[in-house]
Image 1 (spheres, rainbow, N blue to C red):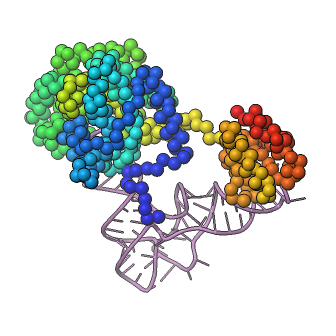
Image 2 (image 1 turned 120 degrees about the horizontal axis):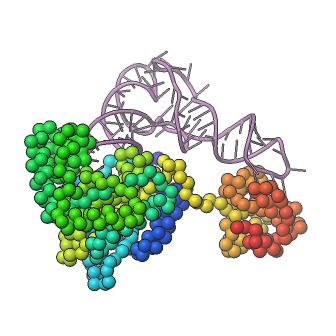
Image 3 (image 1 turned 135 degrees about the vertical axis):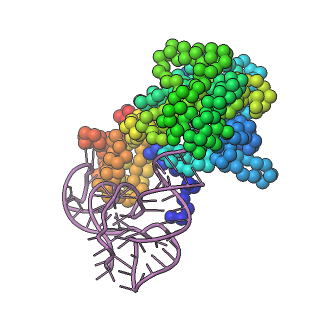
Length: 420
RNA sequence: GUGGAUGUAGCUCAGUUGGUUAGAGCACAGGAUUGUGGCUCCUGGGGCCGUGGGUUCAAAUCCCGUCAUCCACCCCA
């Protein structure tokens, strides 16, 4: 086979699409009980939306975007995440003029040019939520609770909520100074990556895997201890609301969002069975993002969860989603005349809403029965010369092997009664 | 972008120090049972051994390139 799916992309085949459908349907159900509504935005946007919305200095923008020029000479990018588009839409459609808050959810494919590995693909899928128009700490707790509600409902276990606050531009700038001062004498001892981080993104030094064991790490200043009064207050209220909901969490000082418009709450929910890419969902508050993209000061917060990662975790934990793979009946025929008669009944049964299948490959009776079995048919109908002569069909209940004859004229009505 | 491992049947994998028609289990098809699934037995169809080059009398096996997959780093869902 010469032509293959591009690197990092996956076909989702019927045995899996059933799981995807279940997941999507379940998420919609739960999100709507929290009064979140679906929003659908384009899968591609103008490149500068993401440059502004995610940040020029991020890896995503620097090296991971699928960017191309369209025939009109515009620079277009396949969305690498959902938030920027949703914020853009919120501003463009002037939703801020409506009563707030606005609570959205979305789901769909995202694209990042990265080396694939477990739980990471070039086309991957996220289900996410965004809330605009309030900076209430209750909403921060609500979306964490909402995400946990959803994945717990699926049966996932061994989940850990990690929580931090990255402050606001003001207190974060002060903190950065403190951090730089602190690390300056140790600069020589840091790994080469961290020496770069010292200039580009000092907060990242804190969760470096290479340097984590070095003794000076433990005493580095923690951001959640250096917040300004407002951010401190917000953070403790988020914790209070989470406590009210009995949601366990761990404060994680290494959890950061690099950019200036990310503010206050940052969180991540990890699953222990997942290996290196262990975040099932993650998000945070971005009170300065709307200002960056548009010119409105609108607070926002959201999370995104990785559908592939959820599926992976479910598999690791041996959790079977309740998926119905049965058919109601399978029609087995003997001879051409029976086959044609069956084809008519097949049609009538289907129109009555009964899930029916038959053989199209001229298989032997035994082969057709096998087929019925493989399809998990509840009943199989046998139609041959004997039956045609008597004007009946033999109906076999597959589980018990019990058989009875039913008048062809009553077949649809009788089967309708029998199937569940 | 960096590092490591791996590519043989639809799937999981054997394949000896290079040696003649490349194997097994599962799956699939047919039969044992003149018209009846699940168990058992028999038979059968399926492979450019990822791909391109090289070494050799001879390559699935050795060497190099390339593509892909997996794992990890970076970063993130």
